[in-house]
Image 1 (spheres, rainbow, N blue to C red):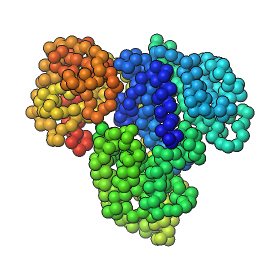
Image 2 (cartoon, rainbow, N blue to C red):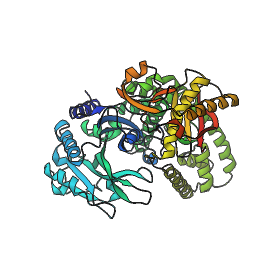
Image 3 (cartoon, rainbow, N blue to C red):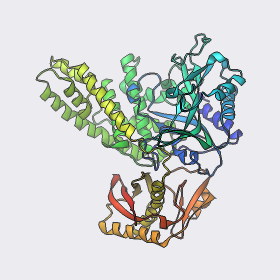
Image 4 (cartoon, helix red, strand yellow):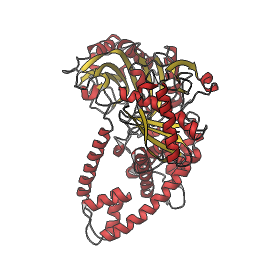
Length: 589
């Protein structure tokens, strides 16, 4: 059995033995969370339970969550950075805290994975004006036999999690490191030494950050952990980097075969890693049941960038893309590797391959236009702004621009290009930070009302349009709701009026909203509505709105529909192939 498979089996078995209930990975596209484009950590889908709602399976949870992080996308290509990764996590919702969490982490590392204590080191929060030094965590490590030399106290920047937005749950964390080298382990732990690989993080949510910047102790203290699956698999399989592990190496071998490269040099290896990582991420995004397609907005823009960057690097390796459908061939290998664990890849295989073919074709046309633009610019040396235009608008990497320029015997202002690129990155980062406004745990009165209104809209769509309608995703801010559903055509203005009427009639009827715990199979047999393609635990919460609707949900909701105000649809549009999107608001009565 390979180290990757063994790691997951050991992890789940260990925490199930410690009374944790296993749940499936949630979607890569967060529900009802305007703060981020993708699920970046295991905690995203579990936020309702971290802020006090009861999980149907209890207070202890274990899972592996598929994640996407794009903040380091330009660093991909080295030994360690990945855009798509899997995160193992164990959770306590107001149950055990620091002592038990650290003891379980230590036992798993030293007994189950048989990591030598000599090769482990740890960091803890050093304290500041907001919160005291985390001596409690350090003392637990010491009690387990860890040397004082192997514990470092670091500032908030390094050893504090959250809040995800401006407000919400947060707290100190303790991080675990492994000496990933055959060289002798140094006596003292230096967190700056990259040979110490961070493998696990235990976050202790014990504070709530308020709007005025104060850190108030939480009534429900939670534990949120995250173990980097690929990094630990790398150690278990004794590999020099994450691209060599058993769940990733076959993809890189496939790409290398397509490129007909026997012994890659450093530049070729860099491109092979980028293609492997980006195609893995793109395949999982396309395979998600939320039906994201390449576009120029939000998740679709990230997806397009991943695919096109893969194609650019395939070209750098000398691969002929035209009419060859190269990216779908790579995606098929990824689907084959992961489909047993993530059945959505198998279910959505045709969608994945079709969208990749389309994007390849579109990019070829863009490249043709880019070459024409280059010819216009190539009458003189190309300045930084024009070089960046070729990169940004037509997908030309700077290496390609330099090669074309050499053929024309002209120069490219690479330094100017780098300055433009840096400026663009800073603007993008500002844009990404704006996504965090409001915070993950926004259970405000406005958001709660709109959350309830999505249930009414969901049922009204079935009443007016079709019984076959299913939710494909939702996104809620305090100002509006956004609801995606399967439907093949535009909803007419007359139908929109009817849908609004149905929702507003239920609001004025003042129907009571109740919740009950049910076995998932029993709920589905009763015809309770569930989001299309979503994976639910064996036990779920079912919210019932009078005799109007029954739906699986985690909440929160108002107690009665008469609290909602007037429902108004602001926009109806296409979201993806066969998926429509409605944006709506609640007005004061």
